[in-house]
Image 1 (tube, chains in turn blue, yellow):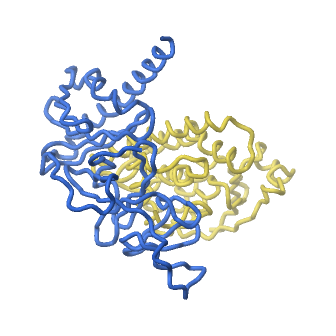
Image 2 (cartoon, rainbow over the protein chains, first blue to last red):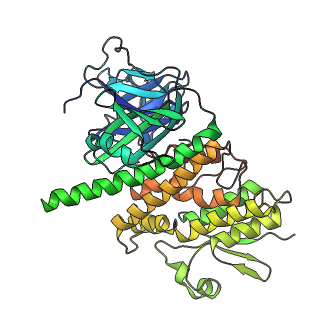
Image 3 (cartoon, rainbow over the protein chains, first blue to last red):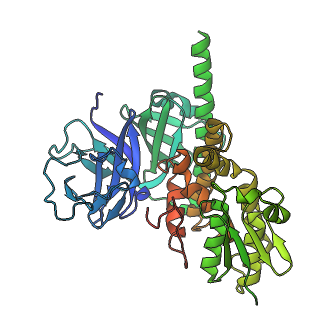
Length: 232
Length: 210
């Protein structure tokens, strides 16, 4: 698995305090959780005990506990408590790999290349921004940029500019979106979108309806691509 | 007023909807446990006499016998919610409540079937049921995203109605048939809100956290 740079995982607003959620990048599973201080953590989504997904677990204060047997891990990924052995001094080796996280452009990003590395590089994202919506679609991440223009907004084709291999700028009538594309797994992608400036909630509704149509169009196009590649 | 009697099976999400609403309303109902697994008691003559499909829940109150969970939720709301918040009277909100109750019965029934196939050996095409359930959750998630933009936290408006009670369990239990919550941010938020309502109760597979 080759991970390079920073990967968008979800909108900042979509993981609440003391909540955990799972995600995948190129098929590899990660848990994203927010502690009681509001800090976000991205770890491998696996309890070292029995391999249970930590994203099914629950956050208590600054610990996340595995749903299966309640093993509790601190913010450093270190197991601190094993309910079945309450008096045990937990070995330092029971630890979950964790990754650097930043929140930028209303999106949570993580870097999987060098766990626990120094400060992340500056991300060129509009700030302030206004988190909008994530869509998940059965469509290869690599094909998204070229397909977005085929879903008009108010009868006009969006103007799409690639800012990097995973950040797109989408200009729609009355609003510009930054879309961070996540390669979830083969044939499946997520796109986390934010407006480049504040937009009142009620004004976001037409864009939300457009995003839903975009997802349908992406999936139809992906099916057609698959069919034509199969035929070829 | 005499209390109603609920024929209940703890692992059945449709029974849970009724237990949840009863608890939210603060109503003590007499509960009769029906041994569905492994006893198949839901197919016994006394149950079939009330519910010919053998479907639970069944609610009895005097001479009234109700099956079909949406009808039971509506009856409970109309009978025990004097403020008429759970089943509002204004036509627009009532229309939306009924729309989502119909969605629950007609569209989200695939999620009930998916869970029964995955957990209780009910025959069925689990892959097809899972795909259809996923599509139904998307419709709910898209709607709740827009509700959020409207400043409304619930399916039919700004306050809890029986529609939320009817649709909540299938999403909360979706991991039973292998659909994770990761791709449904608006549903996660909504489910968290529902966990905070008065009288919230759990069932196996629906804990009070997440």
